[in-house]
Image (cartoon, rainbow, N blue to C red; front, side, top):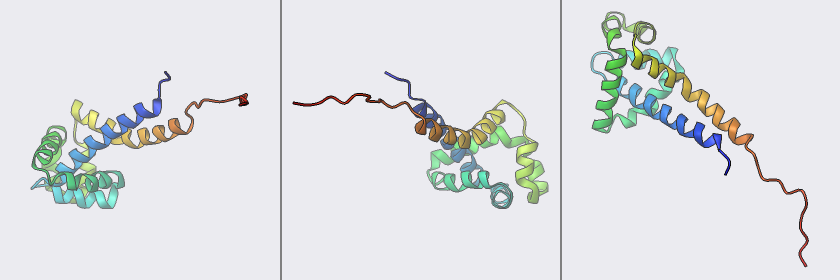
Length: 139
């Protein structure tokens, strides 16, 4: 049995996409900074805006919204006061002022999802296929 890389890359892509959509959907629902982050993401960060759009319906489920908000608070919580002070630069402050290992994991998933989608497509296109060199004749 051959190892199918496109399945591995596809599962990792779905994991990163789910984590990003949950986190950014919950972040957009934050009472103090959610509107500023969503507004600046729409104008300045199309990838973050995509995750917010995908995560907004997920934020309608209460436990997913709470999970996304708690992940966002743990990763980006230290940048909330700066975002409240200057809401026009919310997305820049979100990505530059936050530190920590959870933020690093979220940034890996943030940039990893599009890369893993590309790798999934390429691995599927270049997958090994069974070849038949000689056709058998049937009597």
